Amino acid sequence: MSLKIDEIRSFVAVADEGTFSAAARALGRSQSVVSTHIAGMENELGFKLFTRGTPALLTPAAETLLPNARRVLLETSRFESRAAALFHTPNPLLYMGIDMGLEIPMVLDLLRDFSRHFPSAKVQLENISSSETNWFFRRAAMTMAVIYSLRSDPECEERLIGLSPRVIAVSKKHPLAQRTDITTDDLRDYRQILIIARDSESAPPITISSDCWEVDSPQWAIGLAARGIGWTIVPKAVALTQPGLKSSLALLDAPMDLAPERLVLRLKTDEVPTEFVDWWELALRKLAIRLGLQLPDNH
Image (cartoon, rainbow, N blue to C red; front, top):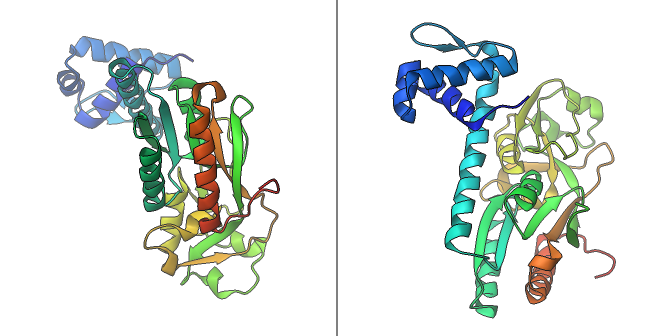
């Protein structure tokens, strides 16, 4: 299957505008071009995307695809912005990703200290989820990231900073929070909020309940759990650092064996100055202590 980005743009435009002619005006293209894009996409997928008429209504299959199409366009826009930044700022010294699960004020303090220690350093930052890291390293020239991750990447060097146990997070008002020892059968009785990775290389989530909602970040999962919508499996350190939610969350020991989440410094060794790497490793180890992480044996 080989879909073209212009076809996806036309698909989203027709869905948003309601007609092929309005989509063409929004895109600055002719209606015939938009029609050709939709026909090509339908031929590639093997099913219809719209009912023909006014307005053009999405078919059930197209409704399912639309959120994914929007995400493709978002990632394309980010890629184009990154390419433009590289053109205007050749060879930035540090293109760095920061995991969304890390508390922003803590990270901002680290960045302030880094700028004081290396006042001439050029830095470009991206707030990313761990499942986006591979994409940024392989396709967007990211050189270093601080992330929570269950798996290592054989193509990059990693410095293990600390380990956080994974726990069951629910609202304090949730029935599960009232129990002293929960079982897997208990979890099956209530909605589970699954964290679905954005890349195909990540391990699938542990699915226990048949009633599931899917989100793409621990922050969404924790926020929904705190509001009583369901339960979720998250790193304890991430749950404890979500602004305004700690008081409404109950963190329960999981009734199954769960590998701890790893906070790691991932990097492309040959593309990051050694002094930068050493500084961040030391600073992050101090942060790990503040977060209550288990430190690696070689610390």
